[in-house]
Image (cartoon, rainbow, N blue to C red; front, side, top):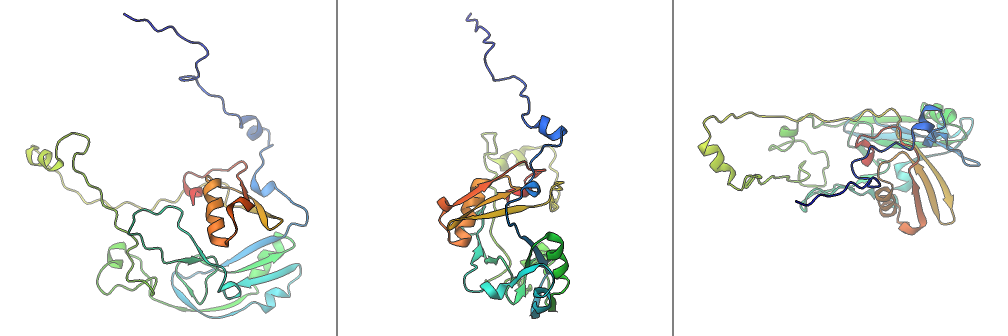
Length: 264
């Protein structure tokens, strides 16, 4: 019999002390919202209250004249160069990405879609100016049921693509860890129970909301943001903005919860 001597210096199996606890309990945590850079401006976003609508008019002149406001932008200001937000997690080769602009142009496709932004000297001035943006919508049919959405004659969310199905996600259950064909197991079982399950949508409830600070550096920039995936975010920014990845730096300081929601 071979006896393996215990090695007290081995790290495997030991409880690991968290490095951030002292900062957390003494109020020294460095959240993104704590970061201030010289001359920093603040951005507020006007979002659509409709799930699907056509923007019939959008006037930002009153918002531009509010105290402390530096600029107001809509999707049409960047219609040709803003590009679309790339998909960070392509699921299958047949996945259809309809293209999501950073700011909607002419039509919104989901509730909460950004339609305009205000840049001001402080966050209160930026938020107040949103109320002075005059916008009108013409409601369009909405898609609420996933099964109805892929049925014949369903209203399309994105009119320029063939339908509402983004991808086909099929699990091949054969040889499901048993070494035997799955159907044989069902055929030989004394009892077979069939049920239909509908998985609810999951919404992670992190305490720290999404937050971002950006500082221009030469022809690139540094971004501090509450994210779980700084490297992937840097790649997505490069693809969206057309800026080489090596000119972008993304820093994830302390993150106040994510639970997968800040993988996006």
